[in-house]
Image 1: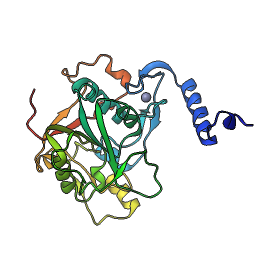
Image 2: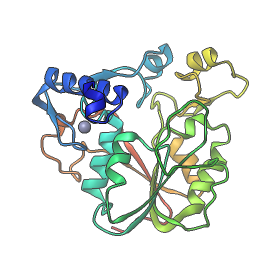
Image 3: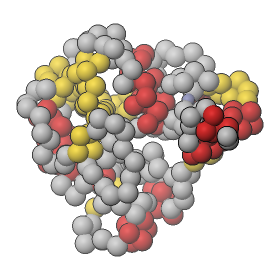
Image 4: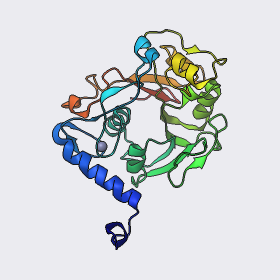
Amino acid sequence: MSFAQKFKISVKQLTKKVFLFGRLFYYHGSTVECPICSHGFRKMLPGGFHADVINKLEIIGAGYRLHNICPYCLSTDRDRLVFLYLKNRTRFFNISNRVLHISPEPSLHRIFKKATNLTYLIGTKYAEGLYYPAGISFFDLLSIPFPDNNFDVIICNHVLEHIQDDKQAMAELFRVLKPGGYAILQVPISNKIEKTIEDFTIIKPEERHEAFGQFDHVRVYGSDYKERLEAVGFFVEKQSPYTQEWNINHLSKYALNKKEELYVAHKSPKQD
Ligand SMILES: [Zn+2]
């Protein structure tokens, strides 16, 4: 009887565990720390990929980054920023919240599904050949199958840049959010361009990669992203952990992207 048979785990699971153990051993240290899984390492794993347009337009939230991925839970710098915001700047984990998480990031999903204060729903658009977590609903963001004013919190990161009619998707997110609720809506964004670049005649994956930085993106958002969200009714605030209000000690240990700001979209004017 093999080790895998004896302990009733598949060869695939066993291989994953061996690789995880190897990563933890190799990256052992305390220079950086993942706030999501609370493990410390000497550095994060590199991750992402190259595209000339990402460098040229300095697109934030895209491209290759040296200290990107947590060796334990595989969170990215983007995931860690969202988690730190929810934990430090909101009552996400402290009060009862009805949450819709679109195309959930695995590292965040693992934590949120265990939080007993949350009524946690996950959804995405179905695509063949991908792995999906248990309990996920399949729907189109252009027509979200929930009533108006339904969620306290929506998390929908790096989705809108894939959708041609992003205005309709934004309007749907606005519709299902409760008054007083908020949505975290991250996208790859360039502050070098004032106006979002989009061209729906570019269809071939290699041409989209060249124009927008990824084979399945339909645009590169510019600094007018905030106004695009406001056009459907949102009140948008930009949040950065590198401001005094966040007041997080030793921020550099979380290996964030210093340029990344959070776009937090409220359904009603924010009450402080
Ligand atoms: Zn982690």
